[in-house]
Image (spheres, one colour):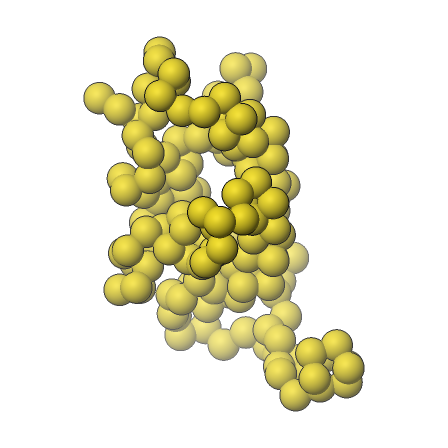
Length: 155
Protein backbone atom coordinates (compact mmCIF):
# COMPACT_ATOMS: atom_id res chain seq x y z
CA UNK A 1 0.00 0.00 0.00
CA UNK A 2 2.82 2.40 0.89
CA UNK A 3 4.54 1.68 -2.43
CA UNK A 4 1.28 2.27 -4.30
CA UNK A 5 0.38 5.51 -2.55
CA UNK A 6 3.90 6.83 -2.76
CA UNK A 7 4.05 6.25 -6.49
CA UNK A 8 1.74 9.19 -6.86
CA UNK A 9 4.26 11.70 -5.62
CA UNK A 10 5.52 13.73 -8.53
CA UNK A 11 4.22 11.37 -11.20
CA UNK A 12 4.54 13.33 -14.41
CA UNK A 13 4.84 11.32 -17.57
CA UNK A 14 2.99 8.00 -17.33
CA UNK A 15 0.43 7.06 -19.94
CA UNK A 16 -2.79 5.11 -20.17
CA UNK A 17 -5.59 4.65 -22.66
CA UNK A 18 -8.41 6.48 -20.86
CA UNK A 19 -9.12 9.83 -22.48
CA UNK A 20 -9.70 12.67 -20.04
CA UNK A 21 -12.05 15.42 -21.07
CA UNK A 22 -10.45 18.74 -21.89
CA UNK A 23 -11.43 22.34 -21.68
CA UNK A 24 -9.75 25.39 -23.08
CA UNK A 25 -8.81 27.99 -20.46
CA UNK A 26 -10.10 31.52 -21.02
CA UNK A 27 -7.87 33.70 -23.16
CA UNK A 28 -5.23 35.46 -21.13
CA UNK A 29 -4.74 32.82 -18.45
CA UNK A 30 -2.34 30.64 -20.42
CA UNK A 31 -2.21 32.42 -23.74
CA UNK A 32 -5.63 31.06 -24.65
CA UNK A 33 -4.42 28.12 -26.73
CA UNK A 34 -3.61 25.27 -24.34
CA UNK A 35 -6.21 22.66 -23.44
CA UNK A 36 -6.32 21.53 -19.83
CA UNK A 37 -7.65 18.12 -18.84
CA UNK A 38 -10.58 18.23 -16.46
CA UNK A 39 -9.97 15.87 -13.58
CA UNK A 40 -12.79 13.97 -11.87
CA UNK A 41 -13.36 14.74 -8.21
CA UNK A 42 -12.32 11.32 -6.91
CA UNK A 43 -9.48 10.05 -4.69
CA UNK A 44 -6.12 9.82 -6.44
CA UNK A 45 -6.04 6.03 -6.34
CA UNK A 46 -9.21 5.99 -8.46
CA UNK A 47 -7.61 8.04 -11.26
CA UNK A 48 -6.29 6.25 -14.32
CA UNK A 49 -2.70 6.82 -15.44
CA UNK A 50 -3.50 9.72 -17.80
CA UNK A 51 -5.50 11.42 -15.06
CA UNK A 52 -2.67 10.88 -12.58
CA UNK A 53 -0.28 12.55 -15.01
CA UNK A 54 -2.61 15.51 -15.27
CA UNK A 55 -3.07 15.60 -11.50
CA UNK A 56 0.69 15.81 -11.03
CA UNK A 57 1.04 18.50 -13.70
CA UNK A 58 -1.92 20.57 -12.56
CA UNK A 59 -1.83 20.15 -8.79
CA UNK A 60 1.36 18.67 -7.36
CA UNK A 61 4.10 20.33 -9.40
CA UNK A 62 2.74 23.90 -9.04
CA UNK A 63 2.18 23.43 -5.30
CA UNK A 64 5.39 21.61 -4.41
CA UNK A 65 7.90 23.45 -6.60
CA UNK A 66 7.79 26.66 -4.53
CA UNK A 67 7.91 24.67 -1.28
CA UNK A 68 11.14 23.02 -2.39
CA UNK A 69 12.64 26.12 -3.99
CA UNK A 70 11.82 28.34 -1.02
CA UNK A 71 13.65 25.87 1.20
CA UNK A 72 16.77 25.65 -0.99
CA UNK A 73 16.69 27.61 -4.24
CA UNK A 74 20.06 26.30 -5.39
CA UNK A 75 19.51 22.61 -4.68
CA UNK A 76 15.99 22.64 -6.14
CA UNK A 77 16.52 25.12 -8.98
CA UNK A 78 15.78 22.35 -11.48
CA UNK A 79 12.66 21.00 -9.77
CA UNK A 80 11.12 18.24 -11.88
CA UNK A 81 9.83 14.68 -11.73
CA UNK A 82 13.41 13.59 -11.04
CA UNK A 83 13.45 15.54 -7.79
CA UNK A 84 11.36 12.87 -6.11
CA UNK A 85 11.26 10.00 -8.58
CA UNK A 86 14.96 10.06 -9.46
CA UNK A 87 16.54 8.92 -12.70
CA UNK A 88 13.82 6.31 -13.19
CA UNK A 89 11.47 9.14 -14.21
CA UNK A 90 13.40 9.58 -17.47
CA UNK A 91 12.39 6.02 -18.40
CA UNK A 92 8.76 6.62 -17.44
CA UNK A 93 8.98 4.79 -14.10
CA UNK A 94 7.63 6.56 -11.05
CA UNK A 95 7.69 3.86 -8.38
CA UNK A 96 7.64 5.10 -4.84
CA UNK A 97 9.11 4.94 -2.34
CA UNK A 98 12.25 5.84 -4.25
CA UNK A 99 15.31 3.96 -3.01
CA UNK A 100 17.51 6.72 -4.46
CA UNK A 101 16.18 9.24 -1.94
CA UNK A 102 17.98 9.31 1.41
CA UNK A 103 17.26 6.16 3.42
CA UNK A 104 15.80 6.94 6.82
CA UNK A 105 16.82 5.50 10.17
CA UNK A 106 14.27 6.81 12.62
CA UNK A 107 16.45 5.67 15.52
CA UNK A 108 19.21 8.06 14.42
CA UNK A 109 18.36 11.00 12.19
CA UNK A 110 21.48 12.94 13.24
CA UNK A 111 23.04 12.78 9.76
CA UNK A 112 20.30 15.11 8.48
CA UNK A 113 20.09 18.83 9.10
CA UNK A 114 17.50 19.76 11.69
CA UNK A 115 16.05 22.42 9.39
CA UNK A 116 15.61 19.85 6.59
CA UNK A 117 13.77 17.45 8.91
CA UNK A 118 11.53 20.25 10.17
CA UNK A 119 10.83 21.40 6.61
CA UNK A 120 9.88 17.89 5.51
CA UNK A 121 7.63 17.41 8.54
CA UNK A 122 6.03 20.85 8.62
CA UNK A 123 5.79 21.69 4.92
CA UNK A 124 6.38 18.79 2.54
CA UNK A 125 4.43 16.03 4.30
CA UNK A 126 1.33 18.11 5.10
CA UNK A 127 1.26 19.68 1.63
CA UNK A 128 1.44 16.31 -0.12
CA UNK A 129 -1.14 14.77 2.21
CA UNK A 130 -3.51 17.66 1.50
CA UNK A 131 -2.94 17.47 -2.27
CA UNK A 132 -3.69 13.76 -2.22
CA UNK A 133 -6.64 14.19 0.15
CA UNK A 134 -5.01 11.77 2.56
CA UNK A 135 -4.65 12.04 6.32
CA UNK A 136 -1.12 12.71 7.54
CA UNK A 137 0.93 10.08 9.31
CA UNK A 138 0.91 10.56 13.06
CA UNK A 139 1.67 8.12 15.87
CA UNK A 140 -2.10 7.86 16.31
CA UNK A 141 -2.60 7.38 12.55
CA UNK A 142 0.33 5.25 11.32
CA UNK A 143 -1.41 4.55 8.01
CA UNK A 144 -1.45 8.23 7.03
CA UNK A 145 0.79 9.83 4.41
CA UNK A 146 4.31 10.07 5.81
CA UNK A 147 8.03 9.81 5.23
CA UNK A 148 7.99 6.22 3.99
CA UNK A 149 5.65 7.03 1.15
CA UNK A 150 8.64 8.66 -0.57
CA UNK A 151 11.74 7.45 1.29
CA UNK A 152 12.82 3.92 2.12
CA UNK A 153 13.88 2.88 5.60
CA UNK A 154 17.49 2.03 6.34
CA UNK A 155 17.86 -1.65 7.16
